[in-house]
Image 1 (cartoon, rainbow, N blue to C red):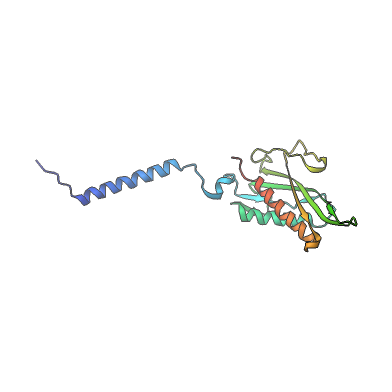
Image 2: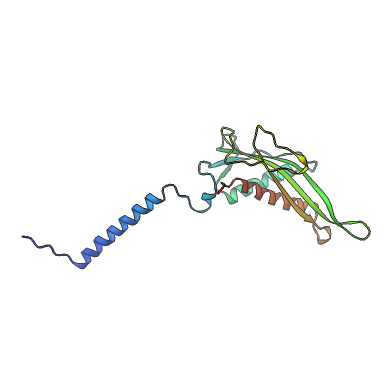
Amino acid sequence: MREFTCSKTNHLNRCSVIVVLLVTASLTAGCAGYRAGSRSLYAPDVATVYVPMVESDSFRRDLGERLTEALVKEIELKTPYKVVNSPNADSVLEVRLRGDRRNVQAEDQFDNPRVFATSIWAEVSWLNRRRLPLGPMHSVPLSGGLAASAAQPTIGVTQTNPLIPESGQTLASQQQLEIARLAEQIVGVMEEPW
């Protein structure tokens, strides 16, 4: 009869191999559909986004072009999506700038305006190739009584900021700040619901 002897190093090697196999099996079985990091916030079946030029109903010049540029930068910076210049992308982000407004918030003793509140609002539709909405779209009432069309689900996004000319702010710098913040809100709409 043959006697089996086991050294301590041989036993440790076997145990370490078994532990490595168990850890590998548990990681691959448990993480098959798991997404980590910023990718977990966004749709997994979308890799590319087409952002057509933002249509603007505002009378102020270049707001649509500036919002389009801010959207492209924001998508590239904060999402895993790649912005492409083709309508054949996985998804299309359509934005319509519905308007902007500037209201007087404070006046001096001579009724000269000192603080303004400027606001800008837009309608957003994020659709896949088949023109179906990506994620649940909830309609948000827009300022000025604007209503979204029933054929295409949209989300209303509004950004309001104070404008104080005496502190060195100009209307152009204020509009750029509003556009950047509006772009952040629109890209936030692209996140998946929890």
